[in-house]
Image (cartoon, rainbow, N blue to C red; front, side):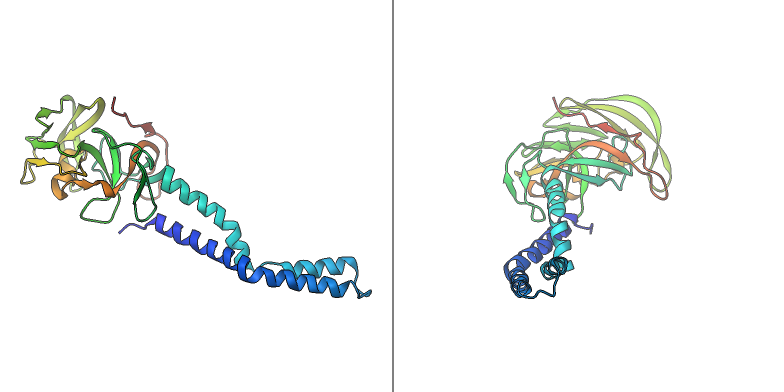
Length: 284
């Protein structure tokens, strides 16, 4: 299971806020009263200098280090939580299911409000903005594992999807692909001869790669997308575990729309680069 940074941030914000609130309600008053009592006594004690009175007063008013840290970190953590939960969230792609569009190690910028505002952690939608469109790239949580996945939206609720002989069709219309070049595809157990094509789907032109020697039927060739669900497929057609394997994705599990690659870092001790930076084409 991936680390849930939203949950971590919510817990940290709640902890800092609670410390700050408890200090304000229960402890701060005692410090203020102690400082006022001291100043009243010091006013009658001619042995104390003004500097000594001010120094002791500041000491009595001094907040505990826990409260100081809580007050300092609370606005920063709250800002980061709001940014990640409602605006944009970075996400590093760990697999090659979207090659050649997205490479392993690419950092993706995810638009969290494109499909509606959702509460952090629980994911409840609190404001409708727009619905996913065919051809967009979406980050979501699949039905079989609690992790972020990234694929392309192929089918909307009610669509009939067919994938047979490495040809993809939606509602009876084949998504056109044009041959670009022959390539070698890294399958994890060695390279295989593949084909790089250019597909045009709903006004989105993007690259797709196939491995002709691999049987991609997956035991089934057609699906009907149920209400409130979306059918997701990777651009690395024969090397992607997607809705053809674990079924359509519920709208409740949508994380956001991937809009751009903003950084790339190869695995291991490699410096990040900006050579893959690009915005993803959007439907017309």
